[in-house]
Length: 72
Image (tube, rainbow, N blue to C red; front, side, top):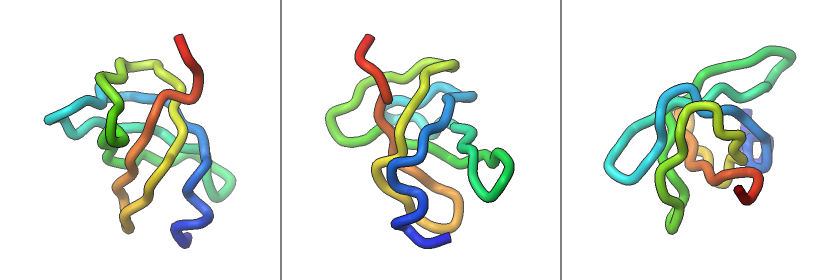
């Protein structure tokens, strides 16, 4: 899947994402759900497990940069 297909997709944090951490998110894609390594988007703080996130950058094959989808 190309970069354009990943950006804007929503997912859920399954391993805490934060500065200095490599977290994990599950993203619904290709008719299922897949796990990706995740880093916080620039200026984003810690994203705990369960947070709904949006993919803002994709680095093939399995890495994404994310930010919270909703303000809390």
